[in-house]
Amino acid sequence: MLLRCGFGIVLCAMAVWAQKVEVVSADPVFFPGVADSNSPIHWANGKRYVYNSDGLPIRSEGVELGAMRYARATYLLESTVSPWWMEATFRDDDGTIYGWYHHEQYSFCPMIGDRYTAVPVIGAVVSKDNGHTFRDLGIVLSDGHEPYCETKNGFFASGHGDFSVIIDRQKKNFYFFFSVYGGPTNEQGVAVARMAYEDRATPTGKVWKYRDDTWESPGIGGKVTPIFTVRTPWESANADAFWGPSVHYNRELGEFVMLLNRACCVPDWPAEGIYISFNADLDNPKGWGEPEKIVDGGGWYPMAVGLETGDTDKEAGARARFFMGSDSHWELIFRKGQTGVLPFPARLRAKPGRKK
Image (cartoon, rainbow, N blue to C red; front, side, top):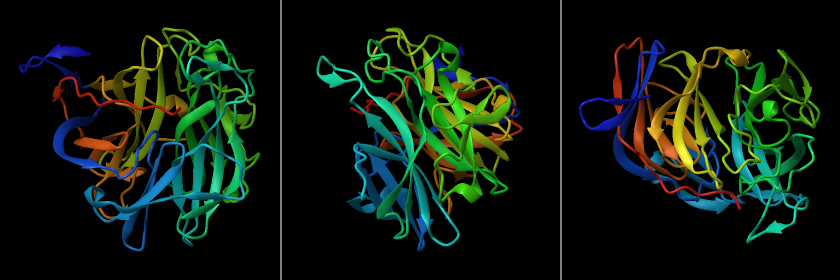
């Protein structure tokens, strides 16, 4: 909603929810690597480890987000998967790192202009050396639709990708929030799947998509019921859709928070804005509130990173760094039970990138 709030035209969040979030400027922080995807983080040995991906994941380490160092390539051993983007991680109690990647397949469609149109899939990996090298566990999410090579969005002919993964508070299930780029219009958008925690080491065939109020649709080739359905399908030149969900648990609110991009309404996915949604229960896809805009324009891959020791892209408190891609010039301030109107900085914009 656009309102005049005393300082020119800015974006404002009305009292739609009891929860509130405010975007505030902060000293800039930059990740060492190029982030053309979500950038997952885990803690080990008293330090953060962050992955930035642009076709090959780069892992860096440090305590403070503004002082990440030792950026090194991450290797996928004995695998032909390339390129790949590490989009989500989980550190188990014994130090094992489980990860999930976005991989683009280019063999389906001819080159159009100077680029191929790809079909993304989502795969799983595991590491026993704190995430320096990984072993491929196979593809866990794909859409099963024939690629539509005449698509006008500029990048994808179908597929599942641009996602995040988070475990529930009971440590029972992992939830995959992913972008659906093909199939019937009523299946395109942001969808969700889940996998039991006990299946993390052998995930192939163990991920189940949410469809028609059940978790029984296969991860490989199954249909979905989106959380947020596209307004105009991805194959259109004027596609209008939410994509690239990043989800964290917020201790201040006692709820889960989803940040989203919205592409609209010409090819090449221009960033119309950054949106936010809340839900107290990951097992209830219908519980996500209607996304509300918090940034006009902006850049791709919005992500919140908690600031306290142990915080990551998957958990935060009342304050979190707000990244778009590799860059953060802002913080998110979460407050519960606020009323009235909170102003946001006008027309925050960052130069977008894109998987190619």
